[in-house]
Length: 503
Ligand code: BES
Ligand code: ZN
Ligand code: ZN
Image (cartoon, rainbow, N blue to C red; front, side):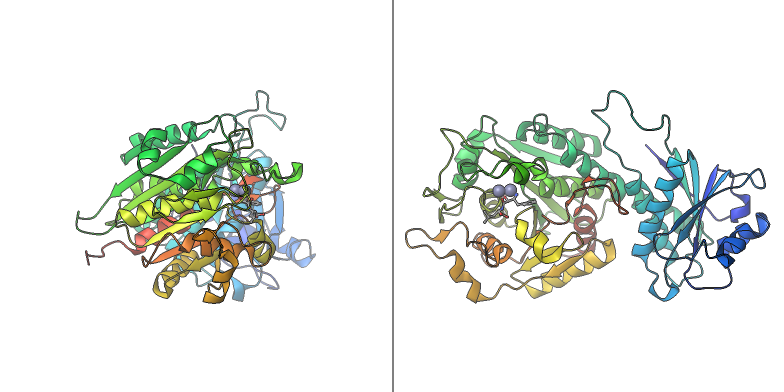
């Protein structure tokens, strides 16, 4: 566990072994911490700027050794881009880049002074984002390395946010950032865990252990309970697998019993082979991460238990594998979901919407409102929006706006997608209430249309996170693998609902 501190002292007085300062692009004169550090280092930073080696371009990282001039032995100069474009998101990303570069250089205690005072961003928000960026950036999944093949003993033990502000406010911002980042990293561990260990049973056990640790109510339901609930869609997906399904329910009660609970629902396919509509070899490679929606829900519930807002939230994750076998569900089958609706199966690889159909029906039946789900639902959303934004679908514009607001505040971006009635015909069936899948055109929208059949009039939003939950390879944002997308957004959304009263 990495410690996170604050200090309101000057950069020159920082006593750790490494410092990161920010430099804006196209500015002749250094300002703030960069200027103070430059003075202590006899003008070397200004020299680098003058020579054009340091330009301040966004994402630029320059490492210096201080050769005994000051206590820290290493300095990272981080390009912040244009001052006019500076944002809390830029702080988060810069902190991540700085910490990773300094870790690789052998640093243990890093001070971050990224020019927030000079830039007009809110200091507490910046401190929180810097903490998030640092801890998210330093995340690694090394559980299965019996020998480390990189440089040994490279690990950062503590970060310190250096800023001139009210210390208690800074401290609580850093604490909040730490809870969010650690909860996202908890979700990333679930996503990165291989599918032979992270079975639906194991996902349930991990949720149970976390719930006991932070003090959440928890029910991990098995197959008999799922049968009693008549969750025929989830059972259909599960029937080809030798692994039992689980229906995970976590409850956080921060408000009175009369206050309706916000429901967070997440797709928990622990491995998606496609079933009888088998995926290609390439298509299957990252499908251990098809439970990242569930991981986002479980991670957000962890964060809420620690942040303790005055709101009631229920986290729901239907978990199963999707496998081909002699007992697998088939194209042509008709399944009946828990709300009684029948679904004509036409592609067993569109399994996520089936698991969610039963989970959403359950949330509605329990009276939870509003409902938001996250699912690695369609490859098509990655084609449409890439890795930067999740697709947002909703039946309620007020709630959609609340989700967009939470996305802005948390830095986990969304983009609103259309849900016009015209798309309904894509999932029309001749012989059942709906068809499971609407084909290639508008694939993410028809998938959302299927989900909408199971929420009725309850305000609902769906996040298709197939593009954002999985990072194919290490890049400027962090390690390859599960990103933890959704933990921060979900938590922020729940915090927005804090204090609301029963209707
Ligand atoms: N889990 C996949 C979607 C996915 C693809 C997630 C790539 C992450 C990366 C989902 O179950 C799926 O297979 N969807 C199909 C839907 C189709 C059969 C209608 C898809 O996207 O091709
Ligand atoms: Zn699938
Ligand atoms: Zn899937």
